[in-house]
Image (cartoon, rainbow, N blue to C red; front, side, top):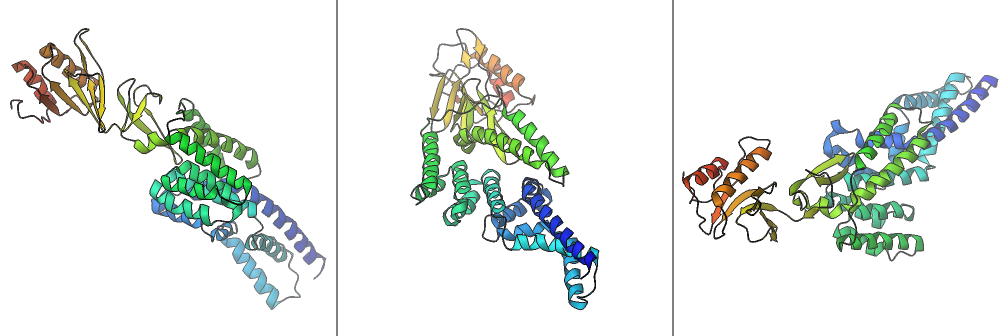
Length: 400
């Protein structure tokens, strides 16, 4: 080999080393692309990728850094070296060495920290993107069978998952020989036990939209940028934003699992559901807050002539809609309307006001609400006619 050949090899080694550094710093960008920009693959494709990343074969994912062109050039270089080992070809030696350094570094597993980040990212995505049952199936075996280096991200994923099976896995990890992992598992388990005991305050969601907007802007820069040299600072920012969103989402774990059976006791409205990049959170449809949300409300029955203002039995909320003293209607999201007899109220006035309110607050002018009548209230013909406009009658006492 002459001077040009050695120059090609040296420059190839230098550029290969730079490539390694570039690969090690570009992780957030390709992880984002690989796990999240996969709509054309469908949900099954995402599941397969997450399952693969959490398996022992995840190292093969690092081969994605070597493009088909570089593999082709590497094979050409090897073939050329065998056929004509004495020829000097600066470009071929440079490209072959450059590619070879990257390939060898990947194949011998120099990127342990990189694999750690990959598995951390995959575990986080599995918890937030998949159903609890499917996330259990992926994350728990990963947590219990993975190498010790991956225990911490596994513990964080189990905490975010929060299922009974995840808590059982955390109890197992709390017996780990390593004190750091043991303590981390115990802290995660304590957090979940406080949450299930109702001792964790649900965090407000006022700021989560701003966090999500900033997070999205940074990820869009990730997707557009391929040089990756400036990504370290951006990764620090996204990690901080992710931690903030994670904290809010975690505090809502029980509410999220109960959705859509969640109701606001302060403004009498159903909860609404939001998603962003796999995170899910809920808030009241009307006031947009969370501190009044109550889980376990499967059906809301608005009553005229109720015994109590608010009564929950077996997941059914019975809510008084009419205050006869003030002649005011309580505006509320309801699934059915019940007229209860036996009360000293003006039923005709109450029914007219409630029906008008229901029709006014609905986006659909032809709102349909099931009507139930109990204890034979005194209803005149006009009241029957108004109730009939709500249709979906469940009581044969309403005339047709």
